[in-house]
Every structure is written in C-alpha cells, then in structure tokens.
Length: 224
Image (cartoon, rainbow, N blue to C red; front, top):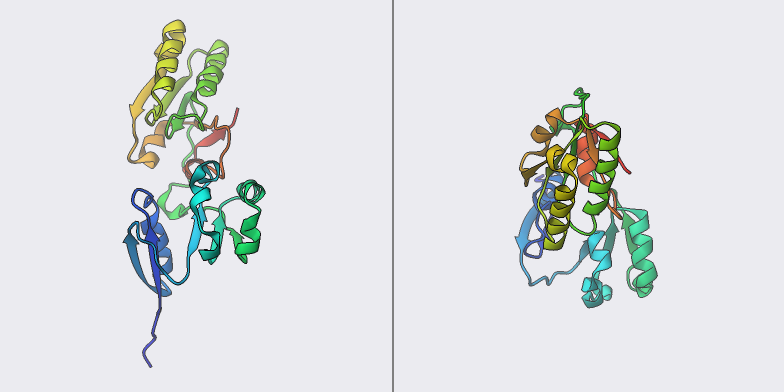
C-alpha cells in the first residue's frame, strides 16, 4: 500500500525567510512540504515562531492570537517576557512551546582548536548588540595586552553607532590599529578559522545561534 504523506505548508512573510530552507528540510522526511513566501497567510492551522527581537516591537499588537494554533519560543525567558506583556495569549492559545535553536554539527569541524590573540565579532552592529560596550571592553583589554586584534564581521544598521565608534578609534590610537573591519561575512565557518574567541556584548539574546555555531567550530566565547 502506498505511503501517503501528510501535507505541510510553510508560509513566511517576505524578508523573513532566512531559515526557511532549514525548516523545510527538517519536515521533508515525514511530510510533503510546500513553502510559500507571501503576505497573504490564510490557512487552517497557524504555527507561529516568535523571535526575540519581535518580542520588543509593536508587531504583537497586530496579531489575531485566536487564529494561532501553536506558538513557539526559542527560550523560556523570551516566553515569559511576551506573556507578561500580553497575558491574553494564554486564554487564546492552548499550545505554547519552547523549542531551542538547533545546530547541524555535521557542518562544522569539531576537532579544531585555535590559540592566539585574534578575537571575532560576528553580526550586525546595532543597539541590541551594544557595540559601544564591545569597543570599551576591547580598549580595556588592550591596556593589559596591546597585541590583541578584534576582527569585526558585520555591518552597521544604525549610522549613529558607526560615527560614534569611528570617533572612539580616532581618540584611541590602539583601537584604530587593532580593530579590523571585514564587512558582512558570507561563510562564517571559514572566516573563524584563525580566530580564538568570539565576543558577545548584546544587551539581550534569546540564545545567540551564531555563538552556538562558533562553539562547535572550536572558537571559545567571551561574554563581558
């Protein structure tokens, strides 16, 4: 008898499809999967995965919670923050889950370890990532050992921070010499090959998936 697979539709709004292929690949083993990027999201069951950054926006004011079948958070503390702000969610949604981010360790070299004084920052430079604290912490480190270098793989999302950090570099010659900008990094695993530590100065993260990937790639993490 032919094995008839259940059908799953993965619907994503434009601009939020970064991990769509990973989610689709996961379900394909047991379901017939169809992915769609659209602003028109009419379906029988709605599974909503809420990112941490969305928990601090007004997006949540426009969600019809009674239409949500399952609500997924990636961390317990993000769930607590959202439910405190929107207590009506509990009465509208019966199935609320916490499902942590996962890492495909087959994509990384688990045997690699790098010792040295090349530090990495990977990601956008914006308020959430606290770039001012990043530069301040690194400036203090250089007072102890001026041989450290900070490599920044990412781009500024806020022009004020770029101007502020450029001014810090002008005022501190060591910062100007020992900070290297690499722009947006398309292949993080390759870029991290000669880095010993990755630095996180975020004011808040759900989990920090990029740092998970760095861990399994043999790069130690530092959280000032």
